[in-house]
Length: 155
Image (cartoon, rainbow, N blue to C red):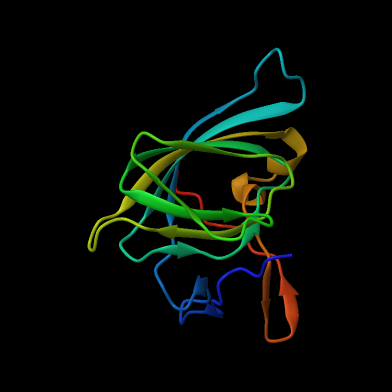
């Protein structure tokens, strides 16, 4: 199995897990629906902004299917056992199947440029019953322990 690029997953002074101390994404909830043709499922749309040099630690999505569309900038993403990240630019999309391991997610845009994308999740209602934090589960292996942490959702 290919090894993802070497990155240090560290906790910053604010207690947030980061990739090499780089800035993290901000997430804005745009909608949360319960489609009548998908019982016990939530359809959630998020606007994700990766600041310049931003990166997200390796993670999964709580069993969700995720469709992403890059709106501005560029994103380098490596999934599961892919041998290297794929760079996608504004207008391009990618899909993460349930159980997908997103091992690299980082801003690949021009220097000083943020990357912005829509992320649409189809997920079991029980995953988001107590809030949307279960949508992104970090698999941080640092300090000899396995940590689960969710992203902060801006409403």
